Image 1 (cartoon, rainbow, N blue to C red):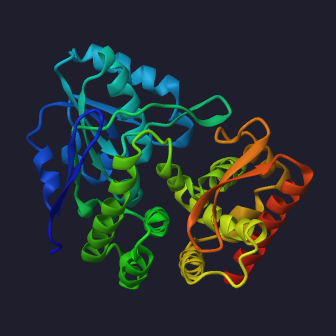
Image 2: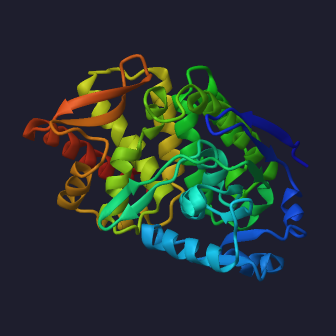
Length: 364
């Protein structure tokens, strides 16, 4: 059985603790508080059915201000007060909606979070951010409002498909590469184990490695004003791929593709030849994981260059005159890079898009 552990996170909104260990899911059975729950979980865990559930269909198209409004109305109909507590149970979409709803309801009520996807466990559960879609714009609304407690039970991973495991591994790889010590080597060592079979011991080790690494970023720069911006690595390109595919390519897989694309763009802007060892290790892990994604060639074929560029141009992180990207410098470290919005820059970006398409065809 994997060892349990706790991790304390310091926040301007107050400290909170992450509890990780097998069997912790059971503490929900006797908890009578109001819940925001991914409706698909009840199929796997019927005992989660509860009269105080606010069930949500956890699809990207419902990650909106309108959905948060519906949740807030239901919280009111259940009689939630300022001293009430909400428990959120689900993946990243549930977390985004719960963060926004709990922070907005009566100007903020306490909430706890039980992440049920590996992506949520290794990354998004800490940091307190919410991101909601408005109209055609992805993640354009949001705020910071961390939960009072996070409980991670790796047993949830047993019901995840291979693609969902790969999604979490991509986000974990992103955080480990952003770390400045040997986290990328530790990731490679652990990921060689049977993680794709939802091995609890290996996945728990990765959760611990990832959260301990991310803890530094969010405590030093909780509100995304400095080094925490490096954790957007892969996301500017990835969000554009995800949106251009009309979400046929899921968020975690798109981030993996986005990191590979960032490597290709970095090679041009930083003239990093030969690539540093860290970058080569990152690329090796990315290609290995992308090879595990079923039907990736056909999925990526649905993404046109024109639609990709349209969504890339609308990313909220760009300025009026510059593309703002997290790239890899010649030393193999992440760096926030500004490139002028011009045809020359677009040519570099579209060339990288074409190269990762060839990469996909070579591995599958």
